[in-house]
Each structure stands twice: as structure tokens, then as C-alpha cells.
Image 1 (tube, rainbow, N blue to C red):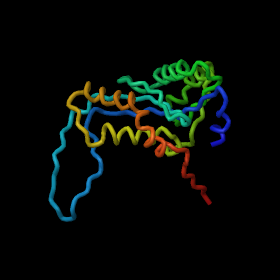
Image 2: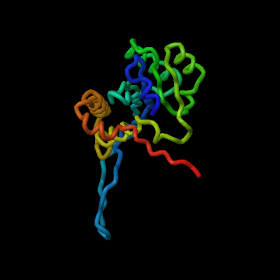
Image 3: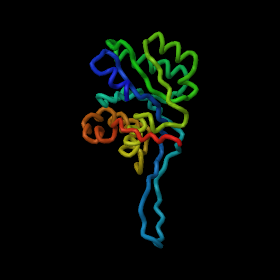
Image 4: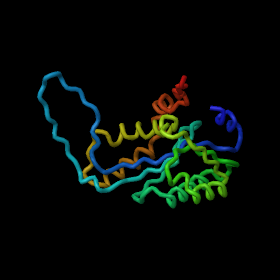
Length: 190
């Protein structure tokens, strides 16, 4: 990515930004079963009524995420708050580049104005290209480690495991380095 080469050795920062919305409920994953075998597995479940929104941005050079956890809906006000948080975390950065999708709240007039005032340049991905947002790989890894095939009886237990994952994320740096590479498979149409 040319932008990464441009920011290396400068006071600029680059983040891949996107929220993920986790419902407090069991998320089933794939399972293998012998052909013809009759098997039904009962899975514990919750009401699934409480949602935890995780707004995150991933630095592709350090692989460190900047995370906010909230039960609030993801909207313009929350994104403005998050951009302010990113700027506070990077006070020395001249310009912060944020790669993000085209969600309505990301493209709102208020978000774009606040970003400009905070010296955050928003770079929008093409529509329907979540595979180009590096943080999507982090979300997949997060779900594998925290939500897939796991049952948390209370929302507080679920919330604790989410915070624990992000608090200790850099202890798994070898897995992150192999997963969060900038090798994007781009196919050109003929």
C-alpha cells in the first residue's frame, strides 16, 4: 500500500477503522459430523437482547488496536466521539489517515467536518469491499477466540471476556502478524 510507505518515518498515523456489533448470545461455528450419523447438540443460549458495540481501529504497522466498548447504537455522535478518542490517543500525529467503509454514519456531514478539524483524513473503501479493511480480520480472530461456540451466562461475564481479549491482545503477536498482513487479494475485472 503506497500510503504505508508514505507514513513510515513520519509523524502521521494510519488506521483501518470499523465497528463490530456483538450480541450477548452463543454464536455457533462449523462442526464436523460423520455422514449418516444422527446427532443433535443442544446449545445454551441467552435472550440475545443486549448488544455490545466495539468500535475499533487497527494500526497496520504496530498491529495495536484502539478500542471503545459501548452499548450505545453506532451512529454519527458515537463516531464523532470515537474520532476524538483516536486523536487523543495520537496527539503527536500530524495527520491521521482512517480507512473505513461507506456506512451512513461514517459519511455524515458532522463526521466529515469533525474529522477535518481533528486532522483526520477519511479514506472510504469502495462499496461492498469489507475484505479490503484490515480490521475485519481482527474481528474474525476476535470472534473465534471470544464468541464462537462459547456461552456466557451473564452479560457482565461476556463483557469481561471481551475486555480481557483486548487487554491481552499483544501477547498473541505471532498469530496477529501472520493474520493481519497487508496482502490483499485484488482481482481485476477483464
